[in-house]
Length: 419
Image: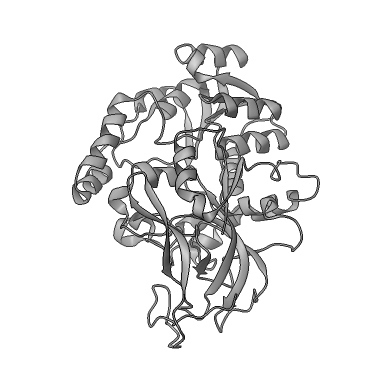
């Protein structure tokens, strides 16, 4: 498809290129309100900076954190915002200063909008990129398709995407193998890899993973691949528990054992608790009526008041994090990969201090982990990427796919959209 557009005259991250071309239209998944996403026609993305590239998207995922936009984070979105931050495709156009990729190259686009050259990026902290940092919100580096809190950058659930920092951000991958082998480099694989790395399980140790959605499920696979002997997955959804069991993971059904979960885990770990716990659930955790009420309030208030509530008050449902604090042994580590949104969520600091818990967290630094992950994406497929997606759908099916994923129906763990 031959592309035509009008280049913009300004850009957030550099000078624009004043080139006039015909404006085209593309299809994209857009936000219109709580539980209301649609596939609309939007302006074609345009080269704005000399190091931009335009990617024709071939696969794009719906992430568990996209459900937070679907449910809770509306105060930080505008109607028509383009969603999505997990994607790969083919380079369709490059700016005049792009030398590292060319038209026709197959690339994965990390969800971090990172320059690759600032102090933070050179420290392996790409999620804190100082070039794209959203300083007006007091937050770290920008993210594709993820609200005003993270730069309001158009997302990748679309036919085309403008990608800045074309010499540093896109990850070139080989032609030939299916997209399923590589698309998870954009988020799922590095997020799960970082969660396991941050858990820092000692040799012969034990790991509990709370939540067996995409990140939790992949974290269990990575943990086993890295030689962690005892890996226990906990979830409410029978299909997710069965999926983990098929991969050799010991599982506990939370709905059957909610009250005695701590005793069960301690019984499996020499009476002490797990050496480490990964919270792969975040703000969507069940079992917290106060947090549930806060979530409901944010959807009822005007956006300005709801945003103020979320950025100044404790608004999260913290059941998963409190469970992690209970399940981890004294002197153990909690690795937090689930997304939380409240600025002043209450934490049981006395218990955490008394148990000498180490807590590590943060958005995944995608490029930091690519050299370790990419060699594993081979024909042997040790992490099971080829069958990781449970649903592969056309872009126009996105509204129903969001609803199905949010309601955990039809065995949904991972949805890939094919523009």
